Amino acid sequence: MGISLITCATLLLVSLISGARAGNEFEYDDPLSFSYYHSSCPELEKIVHDKVNHWIKRDPTLAPALIRLHFHDCVVRGCDASILLDHKGSERRANVSKSLRGFEVINDIKAEVEKKCPKTVSCADILTSAARDATVSAGGPFWSVPYGRKDGRISLGKEANLVPMGHEKITDLVELFQSKGLNILDLVVLSGAHTIGRSTCEAIQYRLFNYRGTHKADPSINPKYLNFLKRKCRWASEYVDFDPITPHKFDVQYYKNLQTKMGLLSTDQLLYSDSRTAPLVSTLASQTSLFNHQFAASMTKLGNIQDYSADENGEIRRNCNYVN
Ligand code: HEM
Image 1 (cartoon, helix red, strand yellow):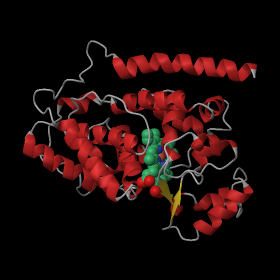
Image 2 (image 1 turned 45 degrees about the vertical axis):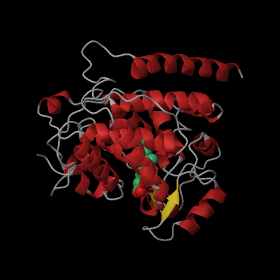
Image 3 (image 1 turned 60 degrees about the horizontal axis):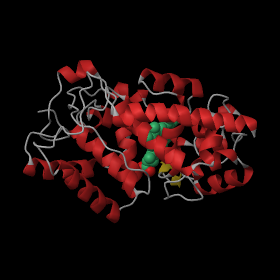
Image 4 (image 1 turned 120 degrees about the vertical axis):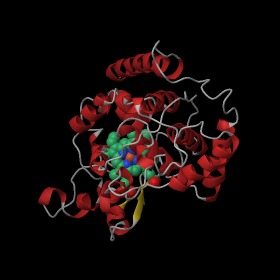
């Protein structure tokens, strides 16, 4: 009880500090701004909002897909829409990107935005805004998005391997996040995006049938959940929901699942066994409003990752799939 109260207080404090920095204030030289398109494209947010909702109404699986697309974009060369470039050898064409979806939504938004405010809004800003609206449409929190990102001209397939695929150790994830300016709290909170969406069975079959060459299942999986997964995942091409209890609801059930050994990826489950992350999982599992508040703050930090060397050569792409 004492420990959990202390953990909770610490988390709140860290959250308030990072929330203030990420959500509302910017340092003097911060290039992004909330008013960036106020006069040059005042309708931008309405266009994005309407389009995202239109697509998600037709296909709700696009909500998690857009959130994931934004994450993959920001991990490689910052949030510069490099994931959208569609040419031989690009990140998007890499093997690790093959289950990414939502590209058509961004193209549709971009086409509409170009009609209203040509050559003005970057694809990186559109993707960031779409990921926020997708979160809200799934029942998650709203946050204000600052704008002014530039689109990168470089996208290299081998750099897509930076994105974690679920078999990493927690230390690898902590180091990756740290290298992007994100801390352990951001890691645990952003992993909570796995409260919605799905994975291909290909990504987890090794956990079910041949974990670390044992020809047995990963012992950290709850036996009943293991049976369920084995039935669901006979074929690598099948899909399985991240959260078997409330698969389409943006809630804290993801963290509760980790407490009952029902994390889908090994990296999800490890968050509850590593001493650096487990107390955060316990706190978030019982505090919906804290999760929502911190998710908004951590997504703001994710969306603000910028690779300044790329930024110097950045552009406003006319078509999100190709450099100008
Ligand atoms: C921390 C390490 C992370 C790992 C190891 C990881 C890994 C994965 C994997 C393996 C999948 C399924 C891919 C497939 O279909 O085969 C997935 C899906 C997903 N990831 Fe993550 N992820 C991580 C962090 C994040 C973050 C930070 C976000 C967003 C903030 C995110 C959002 C999602 C979403 C929403 C899906 C579902 C996509 C869909 O339903 O189409 N992930 N992730």
